[in-house]
Image 1 (cartoon, rainbow, N blue to C red):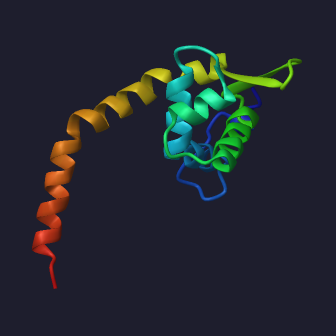
Image 2 (cartoon, one colour):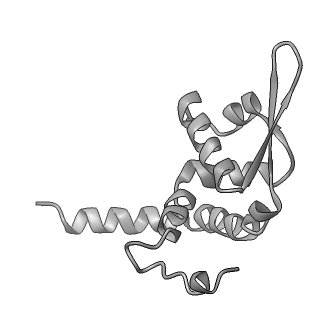
Length: 125
């Protein structure tokens, strides 16, 4: 690793880590990475499993994750062509963190909804 890159600073507006953080903060990216944790998945299965995502957004998100080295894309010469996605070793380094975030959201959703309702009730004009 180059010495000049030993001290990335996420608080600097010029730091490329911000782009990676923005990608990882995207709900679709987190859901896709979480789904790929259990093994390779075909494109149409991902689209079906990650409910609510459009084909366009899925394609865009997969390309960005592949560019970042977090997932791998494999094309099979079938009719029609089959495309499968899997998590890379670099992506695997995120799986525990993603799992913790997803489980936290599920476990604490009632408290978050209660807090939102209390805030909304207190801030009615």
